[in-house]
Length: 112
Image 1: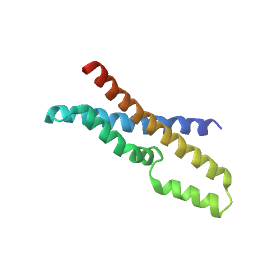
Image 2: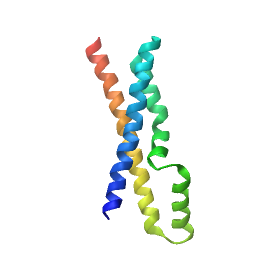
Image 3: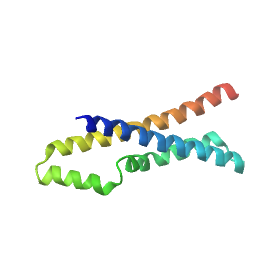
Image 4: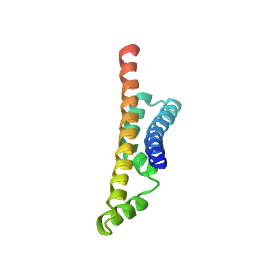
């Protein structure tokens, strides 16, 4: 079970890191171009959530292969495992988005 828990943690933090990294670098780009950085960061965080999940899962085709084996070959344990991986990646991406939103709200409160 050890690799299972390792993969869960990795999926969470990969998705989290993709959203946070894309948002922060987009904020830097917005500063360089004169666009509002916090709005740009929230916009890119919202749009990269699904891509962060795909990156965390290592691409979508391997996930579909596991789902296929689970549904049609009767390997339900692999299907449940894959569902947990997807949920943890979604959780990581959504928490990353929430953190970027929190940064934006703090800027609105303290920046005004």
